[in-house]
Each structure stands twice: as structure tokens, then as C-alpha cells.
Length: 200
View (cartoon, helix red, strand yellow):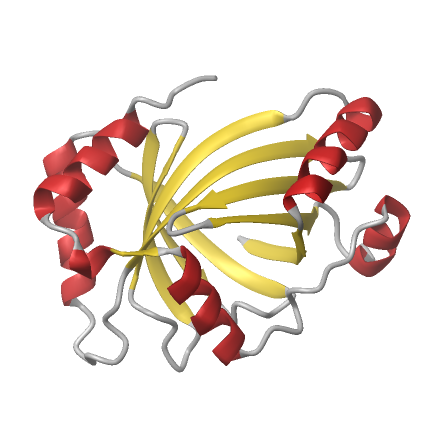
């Protein structure tokens, strides 16, 4: 599946103001509680693998393409809810990375609010970890949709496409928890807590 999307950062105040504004425009958002373990940094092919748990549903996801690209491919398949098996899947994926410079894995945690437009999806994400960050994504749901025009109409500034590789490295270092520094017990406890998140 190809993802065509633009992203931007928000202040905390803008985040909650926009949630109110778009709730009035589109109705109440669909909510997601999500954890993802991104296994390894981006390699030269722009590929990274993730164990993702969204509202209690685990899956393995592979993203292909630069993190700053407008278009990326996403492959995914659901896996079982057994905590030990999810942890073993994480270890198997991690062990496929032999280059120590690419081996670093991080834990990403999101509270997402999703609105459905006529031909796009609008997502606001409160991302937590070492600190809090607030972002939005606008994803095209039809071919040849001008996302820059959509953002202009929504009064949103998609400023993350211009971030360099160094910017993304700093973003991850400042925000996301280093999975390699956590022991098995802690990671399994975190997995368990997100498996419980089936509804809001």
C-alpha cells in the first residue's frame, strides 16, 4: 500500500485548538492509542521495520521510503496477541540487522485523533516518550490530490517534509525511548499495557 501524506509540527496550544476546530467541522474524531517499536534506523534503501500495537491489535509493519518523502510504501500483517511471541518477533527482526550503526531501536508512543475528509484523512498525534510532541498528518485517499492545497484550505502548515536526516536523528533522540537500553521485563510490560487498549 502506498501512503501519500504530508506532516507538520504543532504547539500544544495549537494542537488542542485544532482538535476543537476540526471536531466542529468533521464531528468527533476516531481515537487510537498506539505503540510502535521501530527496529533499526533507516538504511540506505529507506527501509525500517516495526512492531506496532494499535488499540490492542498487534502487527508487523515495514515502511519503505525516506521519512521526509511525500510517498512511502507500507507493508503490514497482523500477528497474535501473545506477549512472549510479540517480544520474540521483535528480537528476530532486530537480529536481521548486522550493521551496528543501523541497529538502534526506539519505542514510539502515540495518542491519535483521526478525522475523515471527503478525499483525505487528517490525523493529530500527541507523541510521548522522553518529552511530548504534537504533530498532524494529512493523507490522500484519492490519486492526484494536491495535499499542499488541502493543507492551505485547512490552515495547516506541513513543515516536516523539509526536515533533514540530521533533523530526524535529533527528533528521535530527543523524543523516543531507546529500546536497546530497556530490559525484557520492561518491554514486555509495555507491550502488555498496549494490548489492553482495545477501546476508548
